[in-house]
Image (cartoon, rainbow, N blue to C red; front, side, top):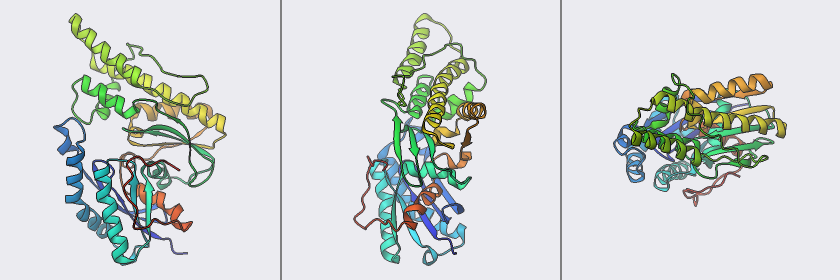
Length: 335
């Protein structure tokens, strides 16, 4: 049986990406054009700047993905694209390109949820075993998702304020670290000690939800109080203390969700999945609890199009297509 070739496009934030994926698991190409250098001087992503870069890069990235895969657009079986959530202007560039290609070449069009893409990035390295639980940790999302079967998502826990990645970035700015701050906090934490013992926010006993706003405020207050007293804070210790709190909460709730939901696997997805402290904490906890842990390699943790191609295979095989009326949905729910 010939496996379908899917051309996937991702432009939800500050990476312009395109990939060709065969059968939802075999990555023939995965091209990513990053905008980090453009946004670094602003200390964060500027939506208008991001959108303009997507317009400039989208056709080149798609051409590069097809060339690297060694296929033509005529050999492609379907066009997949991130429909949402994300920055509306950025999403529109990818959606418009995908719709144009689908119309011009009479190809099926498949809209993909960005978070579903991050989840299915795991399928690019290992077959998924349902039921399972997935921990989503990124700049804009921190969620626990239960999947009883392929393509079915139940959000059982989510952040009530700052996502984990947002908290990392805000703490990094407090320490005057350059953008992107999350990886730099993680790097500092590797040589620091948990000397501050920041609070762990558990919320209600039975809740799977998260809250990092109070932790972020505790870190910022610690820095400001030290400055007012003329004390010198060791950045490595502050980073290690902050990260220890985040990791303990994420790991504890994820493990509890797997055990209580009867899952067979714990998946990790999103940009924060590249965090060394989180990977180490989850690996140790899953070994103790005899839970199978699946984490994508570093290059698949950030935004990319291969994950969109992986997520698109289920709706493609189920015959679910989007119409040319599809629009960018910045607040799209995961269903």
